[in-house]
Length: 61
Image (cartoon, rainbow, N blue to C red):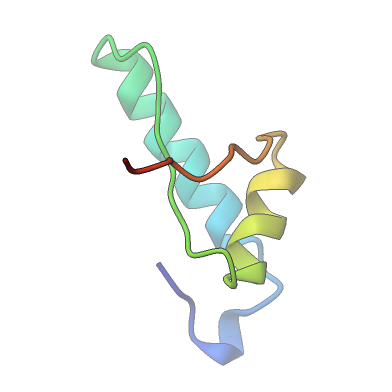
């Protein structure tokens, strides 16, 4: 997801993820999985800011 430059700093990502979490819990989900590219610093900072730790990338093979 991304926000228009004029909307940056308004914590839209946090609000959207909170809404996703609320909907998932209401529907009975027991976990959420978030993925981002290693270089996506904005996404990683967002995930850390809302209390999600980074997981190691999957090992293939």
